[in-house]
Amino acid sequence: MSERIAFVGVGRMGANMARRLKDCGYTVTAVYDVHRPAADALAQEIGATSCETLAKVTEAADVIITVVTNDKAMDAIFAGRRDHLLIGAKGKIFINCATLSPKVHRDLEKKAAKVGASTLEACMASSINQARQGTLYLMCGGKQAVFDKVKDILTKLSDEGKLLRYVGESGRAAEVKALVNMVMNINTAGLAEGLGLGAALGLDLTMLREIFSQTGANSRVLVTDGEDMQNRDHSCFFSAEHAAKDSGIALGLAKSKKLDLPLASATFKQFSRMVKEGLGGLDKSGVAELTFKGRHKPKRKKK
Image (cartoon, rainbow, N blue to C red):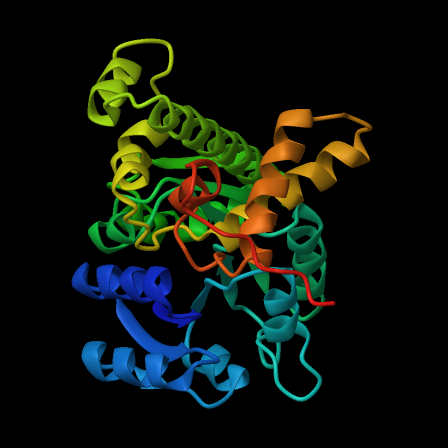
């Protein structure tokens, strides 16, 4: 465990991953976040340095793990005008865990190679609790040799490697992750409609959820979101805003292949509507607020 590790993006996911690796005996040397208080607090907790610049993060570590929100944020940390992670990056490895467009991962691999650095995508199909427990489902894309170099680190984040998958070349893991989230979001929106209609019919929703679980209506989403939809508990583990973004990525891939995906399109519209209506910060289970009768009043359009 000689590698010095740093994290860029220490919200709830990134911070818990850093804590997990620290617990496993790795040296987490540096952290960085655009929200400086989050980085400062985590640095104090785990004995790392809260860096003022991205270049200092790269200088302080051998492996830099990034957990940012979207393509724009990724571009900002790797291609900023005055400060970015590729400054002095020769020999460094960047593990990028955000759900991004596949092209972003491919382009970044090329940029990193020009300065003698390496990249690997490690897309996550899990949530906050799994990040802390080291039971993330990780889908990795990039050069096999790079994956092999950091496999021990990734193993500690993925239930000793039981939940670790090498998918293929750069961009492939992002494609798979987009499809995972696309299907998950469709299931979430479908469940919200089923429970919403059940409520309108006056059915006992606890009974309905139990019957769903014992029939073809069963799904992983029923387990994670069903009770929350019924009880209107939308504490955020995976936001509606992220659901809209990820469904959009999948639709972009479909468009590039000239495929029409009506269910994915309808789901994207629902989560995009949540964002427009100011509900984007709710968990994806909050899509039920749009389907249960009388729960949400749309914002009035300004004249």
